[in-house]
Length: 236
Image 1: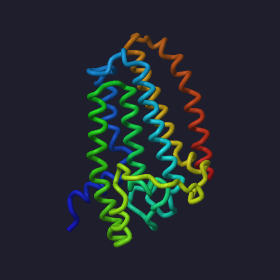
Image 2: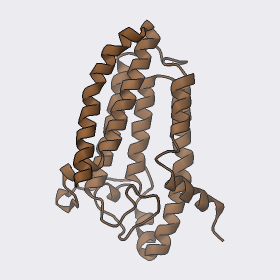
Image 3: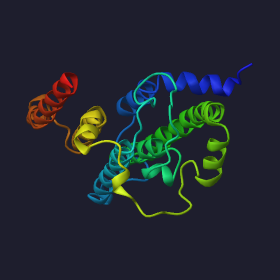
Image 4: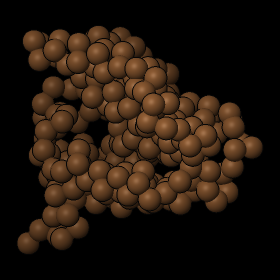
């Protein structure tokens, strides 16, 4: 009989694109920026640090997708791996995409500058990925046997033990293809940054609806670029 932890991991994997929405909505509605440890005195350091962390997380995701093999789960709602990927960032950690997501969420919440929000977001990711990784590892063990066990022994889940020379010629995908694939994640990052910065500005200056409108105009190019790339992605 399948372990309940594995069942939960499979469930969370299936719905991973939506499971974060509840805590994000709660944070944005009920929590305020600059509380309780982070203050306005920390600016612009907090915003710059958070942006750099989120940016590094997305760069890690892009690097990972450059080495993604065909026949993997991707954005599917079920586990699949026709090959055991050990190239690119998979040489250093077994879950580079999830590590990238930690950096993105952590960075955005540092921009938000609320330590309770940071605790909620990171705690949820730890909870979710703990079970997802258990389900994935069970699947990989059954699929690849000793090859998986040897890889598991050599490469840690999240924190690299050592680094090797990067070999770009082993890339499986073009950068343009990866950027098209990552368009949703990149758009979500910029959208969350826009919302968070708008909340911070409103927290400091109490904007009226009329004063918010120019910020919406600033956001419109981001939306237009996103729609353009979505159309390109659909045509492909």
